[in-house]
Amino acid sequence: MMKATLRRREVVSFLLNERKDLLVVAGLGSTAWDITAAGDSPLSFPMWGAMGNAAMFGLGLALAQPKRRVLVITGDGEMLMGLGSLATIGVQQPRNLSVVVIDNERYGETGMQATHTSAGVNLAKVAAACGFRSARLVRDGSQLKALRTAIHAARGPFFAQVKVRAEKLPLVLPPRDGGILKTRFRKALLGNSSDLD
Amino acid sequence: MKSWPEQLYGTLKDAGVRQVGYVPDAGHKQLIELCLADKEMRAVVLSTEEEGIGLAAGAWLGGVRGALLMQSSGVGNCINQLGTVRECRFPLLMVVTMRGQVGEFNPWQVPMGQATPLVLAAMGVVVKEANSAEAIAPTVDAAARLAFGSYQAVAVLISQAVIGIKSFQDQASR
Image (cartoon, rainbow over all chains, first blue to last red; front, top):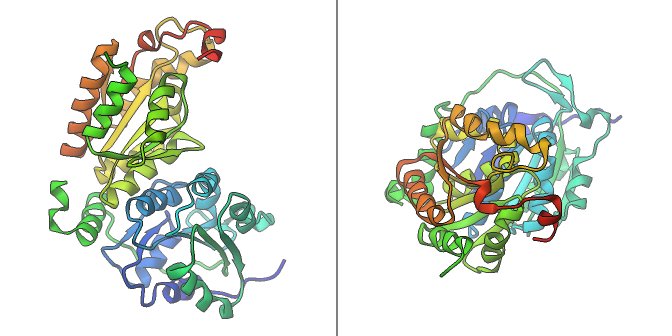
């Protein structure tokens, strides 16, 4: 096995740099802290629960907002819990949806236990087999610029599995009140009249 | 006189529902076909019912109303995701066709069917039962108002007596 060199916080910060009007959903656990470390935004929806369903939040949002780009950033453990959602997304073919898995091959929040990807399960191949228009494995920093461009411009559904070091990092926590996270997102996206819809 | 699935389709349209997640059920067959044929609606077939909870929540984040169609056995698949709905106060409209309830012929359906209203209530979902064909559309109309107007999770349980499937042979022929 090749040893991963990329560092998750650097990857996520790079991908979210100049995010423009990108809508971001982050899966339970480390990726929620990663997007917060990159700079909290009302147009980010970090999950504190709902493990296994981040990609489906992204699909619902992408279908509701076809003119906006939607990015789901989640972990390998979270994605493995919702593998069926890759098939569901493949059937719907949302052009504006990207799913990026930050893959440290570990359940990082619970003691760094190994996930299926550590044994070689290839999520990018699963996504490709499910009908994602493009799916790639990223191991090298030189691939990140193209990845960021794809998140903003590639015809979706687009998928990337980014291998990163298994490292325990200081928590950078987003607001944890789910009602606030929901309402701030809708206000930022839909305007102040969003509560009248 | 319109059939109850036709009435229910009209109710969902009038409620502004534009995304419909579903795992097929014989009882929802006609409604699913109506939704799939509607170019203003996006009908999304799911690999498991819990996906539909995320789909509907994501749609709401994007300003679109969703509904979720399933059989009672699928309610069990949704439990943990319903916790997120409650914590975030996402509106949620579920229309559930019941099995394991009135005149069930498959014993494997009975445990989840009997537990369905209890499980939903335990997760903070408002449960409304529709026990006749005439009651379905008005019950779903009221449920949609409660869901989208008051940010509640609401499930309408359509009685197995309405679906009226009596045997495996009957189910296969639908």
